[in-house]
Image (cartoon, rainbow, N blue to C red; front, side, top):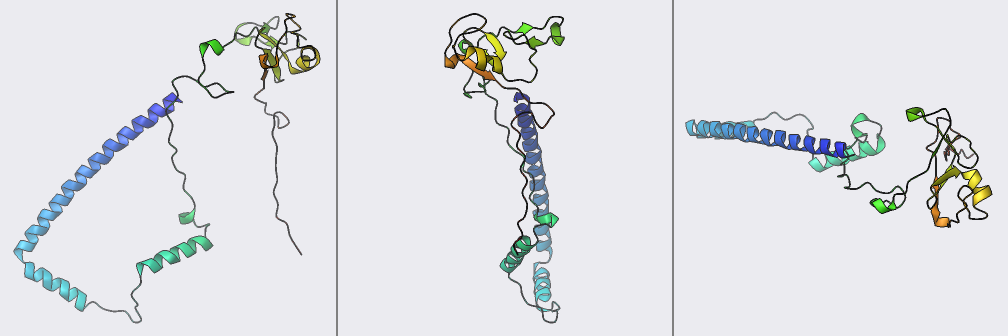
Length: 216
């Protein structure tokens, strides 16, 4: 997140510098045009006025030509947009979203408040026999079953991690940790949910289909 924000700030600075350079070039070009215009007017100002009047008075008129109000064009454009919204020029364009500055401290996924060191609790994970290092796999400390994509519960006051099924059947009725035998409160139990898999049946995925209703 911080890298994206820093990249956006760098792009913004480059864009502003490029824009300032373009504005400076535009001012120089405008100054040159103004000087050339002044020099032309000094040479023959009366002839320029005659040319303008001649162009206005003797301009050819088309048959049935009517002066159009600029506002009427805008109204026609709006009507066309309302009735022909599928045209490419009327489709919405994607806008670049502004990246917010990252927080100084990472927020808690539960309260969204900045994490504090005293709020962090070590977890005692049990490693499956025969696995270690980056290939290590973890098991439930109560049943010994491997933890893959099941929901698990972490007891904050004991540091024990168990499957939610074991928690509901063994720990919750007596409010006692099956591993340490220590009592715990409801606030000590933290549900750890899985991120889901590639199967549509996992997680809280709901598919909705909308159709048109035809009335006779």
